[in-house]
Amino acid sequence: MSFPFIDTHVHFWDQRVLPCPWLVEVPKIAGPHTPAELHTEAGGDFPEKIVFVECGAPWLDEAKWVESLAAAEPRIAGIVAKCMMNEGAATVANLAELKRLPLVRGVRHLIQHEPDPDFCARPEFITGVRAVGAAGLSFDLCCFHHQMPAVVRLVRACPDTRFILDHFGKPGIRAKLLDPWRAHLEELAAMPNVDCKLSGLITEADHAAWQPADLKPYVEHVLAAFGPGRLLFGGDWPVAKLAGAYPRWLDTARALLSHLPAADQDAIFRRNALRVYRLD
Image (cartoon, rainbow, N blue to C red; front, side):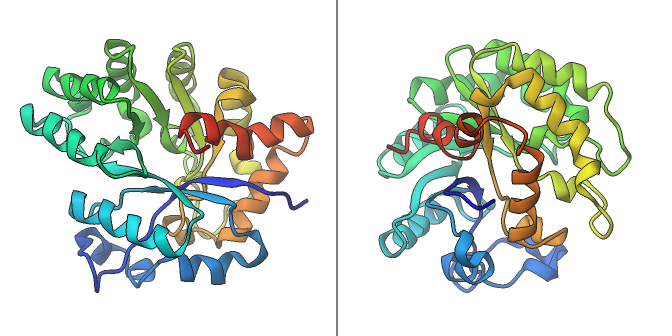
């Protein structure tokens, strides 16, 4: 069933404007992906509000470019900008610069590709993330499941920072791995300053053969741990196109949550986003 929703995890890029070097690894999605392309793909299921999440382009130029996109597409209501956490005084200065942009609500420093599984628990990283909370911004956590123990330590060390866990912490869906991800997820959910995105799951599954049943155990566990009051929908477009078109993931997410009361579904697909990313 179709209903209004907010998408808390959308990427836009256009390499004619800004470079995204990592896209050379994924030529299928390397072309321009702007609000115009999302309109074409989403059709009647275009979100009522969008939170843009950084794509690895030059940090300040990217945030300013998305602000310019929002001038033409006002449904872009928030930005999670790139900001490196381990640069000391430069991190604090960059956060101040980003705060000057009206749509910036949070920041992200990608954890997932760091070879050291304890990278985000290093003292300099923790200091930077504490500065995020002091600046009144949130921090998006993007990690793989094997990095979750360090993420738990990071969150415990930063009780005054609001965290959003992207993509359930990227569990090993393709290999049907549930443990020890489940225990680590519960540790995060026990901390009240963490919310979690229902996003990015299909790219962790078998891109060619995934079915909703493959995702169901992970969704059920996150629902039990976080509850519908701390879960947010995210499309992860256009990265998710590697495994399925935007409408397919949206329909799958709706179906996986269709057993919930209407108020809980509205919380996950709309209300929680307004609160967490301060979109009102």
